[in-house]
Length: 422
Image 1: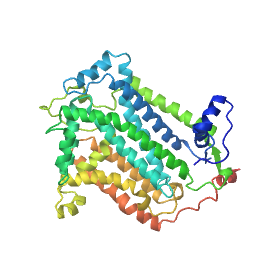
Image 2: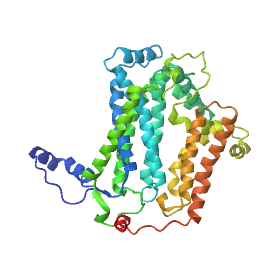
Image 3: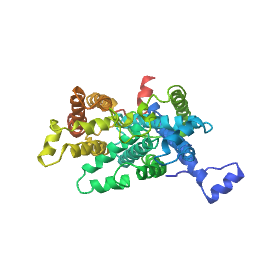
């Protein structure tokens, strides 16, 4: 990974340390003199935003855990105490609570950029798979964190989601019992979720480091989807990309601050300000917004859904089919490097697939809309249509279009279109 001569540091302390532990040389090569394609746009700043979100979530989470009590009798009151009595507790909690949504926003945009510009293709397959692993760990961490306030939606969300594992044959019931720590969602469940919610962000941080290392080995993709042909196609990470990332980061922090200070509960659910009551079921149980597309896929598998019929023929019930469909939707994203048969990476040079990719993004938004609505009436039919299109896009359109599409001619180098414009 490190190449070229070691830099000469003027500070004698830094130089003394670097001779014995070349951490400063590593940072210089990987984050200062690291060459990146010169045509990177602001979509390439979302990875840095996501890393910043992770660090903020870890720091605020550690401080909040000092005041939180993971017990069913005290959890709700301890959160209220953080909000009312702890110095700046309200600020820490609102940063952390809205930070989860901010984290998913930037990661989803980061994934969209990878889909549109073909960042999952060779030689970046491992990089892409590590990204999907990060998403899965984020989902698990966010779900367990949502349970900790022990409000109505926390309790019933935990009950519904953990019960999904009971659909798995043989291992389902033992998994549910292990998650619960008993025979229902209760104090052992809350303790388990608190421990895992505290631990998993550090696991995510480790996978993020692997993700960054894989990116530095394979190199950054770019909007053209072609490899740099020489120094004329690249710039140094510092100061060019750091300046661009700083501008994007400041804009993102302002966006985050708006929700923290002016709309802190906009992306939450009001029922979670009611203490958990196992004997009172909410009228409409919904997860957080970033889970809604997968929740819609889960509920789409009903006996009248054509995608379910092949599963019904081999004895799979609708509940298990929904669970398989929900997890399968993520597995297929991880397999995109092999599902996409086109040799061209960027959708800018794929005149047909580009529109289907944008339609796929719209389809995911429709799934999110359906997931937030009751599972009745035309919402079910719409979620089934959107679910069908989701799998049809990944399993059929993606490979077939790659076989028959005639892409536009690729430029000879990244610099060629810029020089031609002059």
